[in-house]
Length: 395
Ligand SMILES: Cc1ncc(COP(=O)(O)O)c(C=O)c1O
Image (cartoon, rainbow, N blue to C red; front, side, top):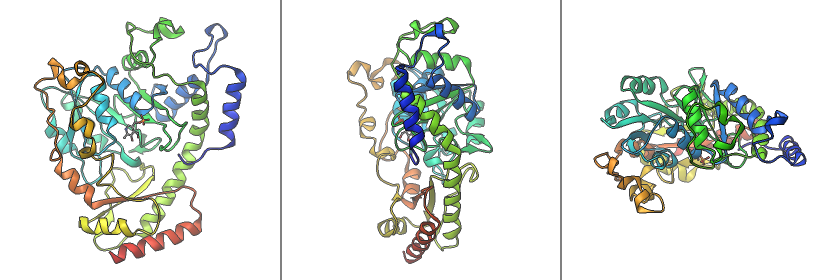
């Protein structure tokens, strides 16, 4: 989250003064609330037909998307080994089993390992666009289509960026975004699912609202209403997101300019290069990702980096070896609700270990990123790039 201010305060004030904080208004008054408007505007912005805003955030959006494409017990879904663990656990929430695959040098799902990991029970894949950098969607989608798999894009960390001129989230059968506090635009917590598929939209929509049967839109649904979760957003979230959405393109433009300045300033240093990107133009510019030839130099550099936001990524919560509850198969509150115990899931691939994705671990050890700030002044940029270059040349 980069920018928030008076406009959001005014939007929240308006909602509170209206007394209408619940997103479902009085249909007799033709009520179209903040969340309704946001959904329409977000779908247009991303280039999809439908969008849902759900208070549960990106995880809720992933779960609804997986429900929407029909994942359940007996199904495997391929996920990258470098992501936030919600990508994998969302598969378990709907009863399926996540299968880990390697990332490639772009630090997104490796299409070759993805294809290698496809088995007879694989039903879908979740490419993840980590730190605002797109996955290789053309290759992944073409492999998925060849094997009749569905594609759910995890665009939680890539809000508004694009791949080959089309915004991420709009390439797959469905796309999930997060608006939590650490994302490009935010309302504190929140998320959206986008899709062009009416059936996916209807199932996801029913899944996200335990009161679906009692909503005005119930009469429009073709899918029989079932009881699921309560992931609804409220009008304050919708109002904040509408303002945040207007800030998005300006934030992205400034992040991209900043990243380009850093990239130019750090080029030509022996033994370290900018990590390859699946589309440098579409990259959000959240980070400049660099790769050393030798892992020892990467860790030595991160220890001496002169600016804040310089991070080694071989440790911490985005590395599969640290997803302890998943590795130890502690899922849900009751053993009978643990998908690893489901009869239909016996025989699926669920033997995770630290050795599951060795190539990913090697790449993570050589890679680090510098977090960009769209509000750095010219002087801050100048002094930052000079200091980082000098530190890089010394390790
Ligand atoms: C790659 C990725 N997927 C999913 C999520 C889940 O989003 P949320 O925290 O909004 O549920 C996140 C959030 O950090 C994420 O980074």
